Amino acid sequence: MNEDPLRGQVVLVTGGGRGLGRAYALALAEAGAAVAVLARTASQLDETVSQISARGGRARAYPGDVSDAPRVERTIEAVERDMGPLDLLVNAAGVATPLGPFAEGDPSAWWRGVEINVKGPFLAARFALPGMIARGRGRIVNVSSGVGTRAYPYMSAYSLGKTALIRLTECIAAETASTGVRVFSISPGMVRTDMIGGVIGHPRSHEWFPWAHDNVAQKKDWPPEASARLVVRLARGDGDALSGRHISVADDLDALVARAADAAAQEALMLRLAPLR
Image (tube, rainbow, N blue to C red; front, side):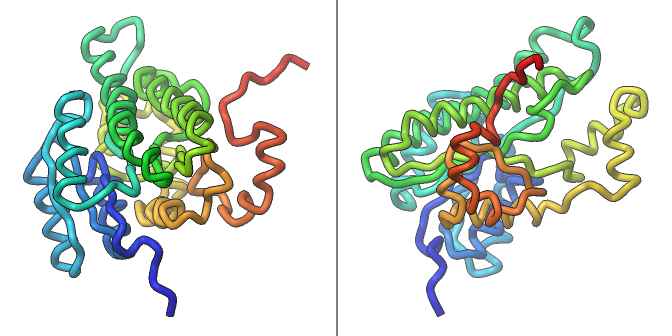
């Protein structure tokens, strides 16, 4: 039996204390990677590490705010010192808040949401990339959302942040195409984590977010394990031909890879303005 290509790789998952971040950390550790997790709440990180250790995996917790540049830089330095050169960065930290009409929102809270959703992934990628480029290998998976592909009323900070993350992915991939680094953005679908729980549980949720209730009622939400499988496959290199593209959990990855040349020629799976025809 061939050994999993992830065995022995070093991974950093931001937002790894709960929700999708924890699901990704567990799945990557199960595949044999050594996993570092970064988030603000130490107790949640410790629980992730405990679950990985209980399954025979290797993991370490690094508490910190993903929007704090010195902390993120120190964390990546510490991960590489403690665990080895970083092979994979998964930017899963994010928030859906603040929710509500843009014209009534608190400017500080709105910008804080953008900071976590955009500045966090930017910082982690910025400090992880020099080592990856120097080694001629590495992968980055940015966890975006379908919310980033079109306007979603009453969650403008989240929508803008996820759109920006898709474009940031494209920019990094274009700059690093010749270096051996591969970069992806993904949509995990609507997953019933604490984040989406806050959306569904909002007092005006039925008015502002009917699509969320419809997805739950029609069982169109996705389990966290579905996008965790996608992350593991991208980490293994299965989607390298699609670097710079946005991939949904609903996509057939093998079918997309088979048409990678078409995707490049058509500039498909990327942010583009539709022409007026």
